Amino acid sequence: MVLVLIAANYCVAQESSAERLRRVEESLQVKDFRKETDILRQAQRELKDILETDPSSLFRSQVEADLDRVNEKLAHHDLQIASFYMSAGHGHSLLGARSRLQNITQNYPKFSKMDEVLFRLSVVSMASEDEKEAAHYSWTLICNFPNSEYVRPAFEKLNQIGVSSWEGCQKYKLQ
Image (cartoon, rainbow, N blue to C red; front, top):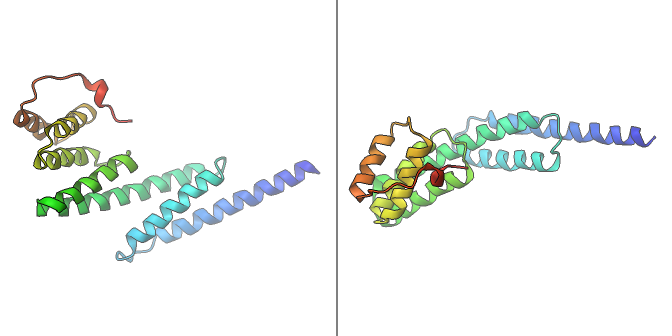
């Protein structure tokens, strides 16, 4: 009798996760770009909640894949806004760009354009006259993305700063 109740509860929990996942996937199909970011943030919250409330779900791999897809889109949105702020190129705009770029590094570590994010962080740091931070972001880029198109400009930034020493890549590895 107890096993039947446990099995019934498990099936209900699985149906609940399945239904929630279906709703999230439907919401991701909406093409109203004015609401896209709000929809993505809601989907992100829902997917994270599914992972937390039902960690042994049969749908875990699908939920994780959907969460990666949502996070990629949100990071891309932040990168676009940071690029806009950087094009203004002064004062509060640079702070806004730095904030968006740092948000990407902290919240979206799997972002496919992380090399660009790190390069832009080094550019913003140079513009803010924070050479130590600019060197840190340049070395992080070089160590983690050696084949990136941004490696050469990162070395140029390091030369501009006058960095002549190197401590090895162990210090700059991304988690």
